[in-house]
Length: 50
Image (tube, rainbow, N blue to C red; front, top):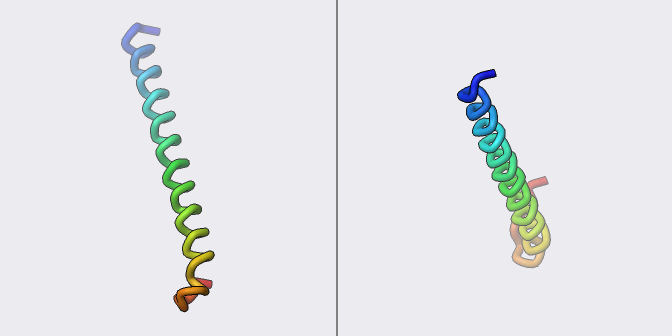
């Protein structure tokens, strides 16, 4: 394998790790905001989405 292929594989692995980390962080924020809405909506008279 050439050194260029090794560099490409390392950079692709790093970027894939960053994308997965960002996606998990985004999913966690969605869960937190959903739980907050679920907890606050009944007391404010807002409809629950389900």
